[in-house]
Length: 210
Image: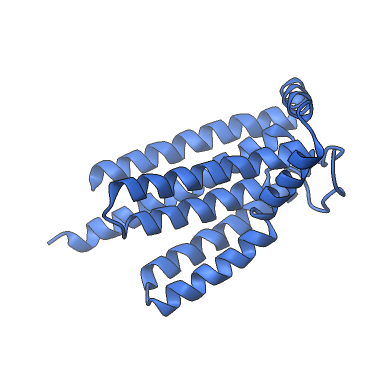
């Protein structure tokens, strides 16, 4: 138990360090070369069928995620998974606060999209990357923790990881985010989720002490 806590705290510290580095680089406009290279390289693979697919994937990190979150919370309440319900609510509430706070703190303007209209919010960090990591990652953890089958747990974690990565890629493909925005969203989510797990483990340890 103490090992898990220490590991989560280490991950949170590393995520904070790398986020600070990325954020400073964004502020000083040192990510221009990286962002331009990745955006241009990905756009070379653009095609009508792939664009339709990317719109579908990005929907899973936006309106689709909101619908999924509501359904998941209803199911958790119906199953009386109180701990899971609280975990999901706190995770999403924290993600919302972080997303809004950081976007308004950095005021980074959006790139010119390749497809679709320009979103009305600021660009850094990517809300789709942040929310998809938090929601699908925590959902995978809550489900995997209640399943004994190792192959099924691996399938759940792998599916969640691939979906989160695909959502981030879709934002870059559509041109509504810089790659550094997506990386920033992932790092923010890593920091938040790792901190939550560490605090939860510390709470459990304190309750189990004589």
